[in-house]
Length: 282
Image 1 (cartoon, rainbow, N blue to C red):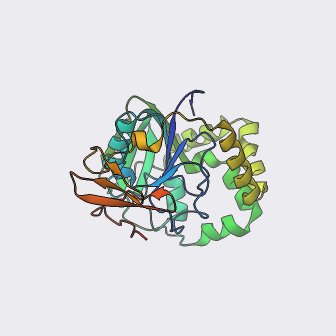
Image 2 (image 1 turned 90 degrees about the vertical axis):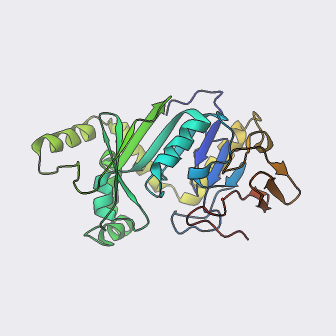
């Protein structure tokens, strides 16, 4: 990621494993770990919000990280618009179509490809034909895990943008990934071959370290680099109308929308009441 030393960074869908560089964390499911690999990390300022309705003022950030979120949302165009509204640069990561075909996460709504540096999104209309087989292999078979980690370019879409996110949403009827084509196979194999030996083995080395130790180390390093550039009070707006809000002892109020958002355990909960699959406030 092309992050500069003084960038103010937002991470959407930070979950249990946020990036060290992120200054502000944002996740829609603070209390529900169903769609992530562990409990939420709250080692720096964090809010509960829907990426399709970000409660931040325009251009609040220099850089926004959106990793493994785009495939989950109901309206990807709305999320993409919000990313460009709050930051001028950023990074998007999702599973590739190959990963989706193999693993078939039931809570993913979109299949995503990257073609000529353009994100291509298609509505997911079928589940994986392999069921839970490859999830079980990843969990229990070290050889399969090693293959996945050393060939991670096959399973990930990694897209960095500056100024504008280039994307298209196409009908779901025809896959753009023709695995019967020799040309397609050649391109995929060349992507794997172009990854340096070091970059192939870094994921394996990371995976060998217990997750708890990794989380502790990342939290420590994140705290060491924390700097006060903007407080939440400076950048938070109403997630719906983007207007000013009033802060109270136990909540945040948008008078224009006549909505009160609670603050629970020092975490502002800014999910719009009518947002699809909204999280019930405690």
